[in-house]
Length: 109
Image (cartoon, rainbow, N blue to C red; front, side, top):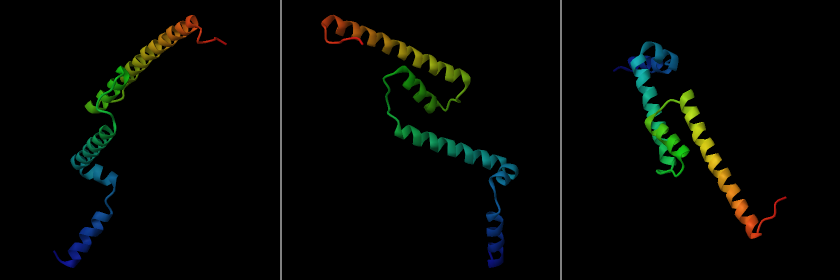
């Protein structure tokens, strides 16, 4: 390749934008996006624990692993899991408060 051809090729590359890539090379654009999504998912998974104790954490981790979309249904399912956990926590706190009160180690204000 001559110097002139090399400069022309470089000049054409420097004008390439995301929208141009998407319009003129849609399959390449899709490959780039898919690769970016895959690498970001791998990066996120590397920072998360491999096991989770709560159902809501397991649900979220499974969604990330599977690449599930954050649909309204997924949000609702997650919310239900969080509400169940809050209900359990509240029941546990009430039970603990009753035991502490009976033992005389807690005074209610």
